[in-house]
Length: 397
Image (tube, rainbow, N blue to C red):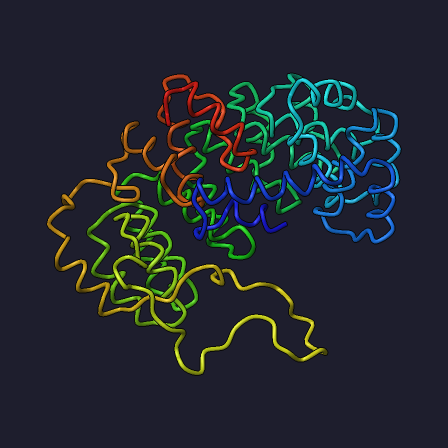
């Protein structure tokens, strides 16, 4: 679960993710060496998170297909199991994973189909009609996976399914359809994502980053002004400003660092535009006195959610302003940047190799969008050994 969080975090880059992967692989190797005894020992203390399903499925993978299926069938039939088992299959070499995917992609049981579809997407393996069928399934978990996979795999033939799911009753399905529509460059996708972000909630931050990045410049400026005009959406305006890559927003971002509710996302936005290293430039500050958020120490408090900005650093405002005064001349008006790089293929490749995990996700999407024929999105969450091979094969490293 630590590795899963790190793969999307602004606090990790590719090199640091390699370190986590090596640790995880060493633990898995120990479990494999222990065989049945190790698997039974772990199963006795099994929890219900995706990480538990990942470990149990990984432990049974080398014990044969029959034992693997028995193990998976013993797990709770819920989305966390689908996520964990699919991740375990994704970590297997494709030669080992392919028979499992092929056996389950058309299974009658939705959870097995979901595992196969998710694992196939993780391997960037197109399962053809099985993916399209999943996108219209009555099972919401399976339907969301199909809609998400359409964008990740560049399935232009699934545009109609995506369009029909823009107003799906399920929020996750609705969002995945709109996100994939943007990845497939459907003309109404950005507007649909704007509707999502204005609705607030779970997907607002990511919808804001995507919509603002791919809208026309004048439209994104209007939306940013609209969001900044209301206290309730001020934080989203700061996120959106960083997503545009426009250095003209930097002075306003520096001002926003003085607001406790926006300070951390403002520093993150500055990094996204300029590529500055806050630690190297002494821009890391202290949490404001009296500031409180997130779970309390009260055992009766039911709020245990980790705050959205918990992984982000607090800025040292004066240091950030001083840096911008010294470095602002490097950034051209009218140019749009990602981590200080121009957003052409060379610049995006640089970010994909050297950026934080959160910015590598952006670079991967933009590289897919700038391709002449679209295509699958580079998977920044895949095992790093596989990422290295793809980067080398495509001369991205």
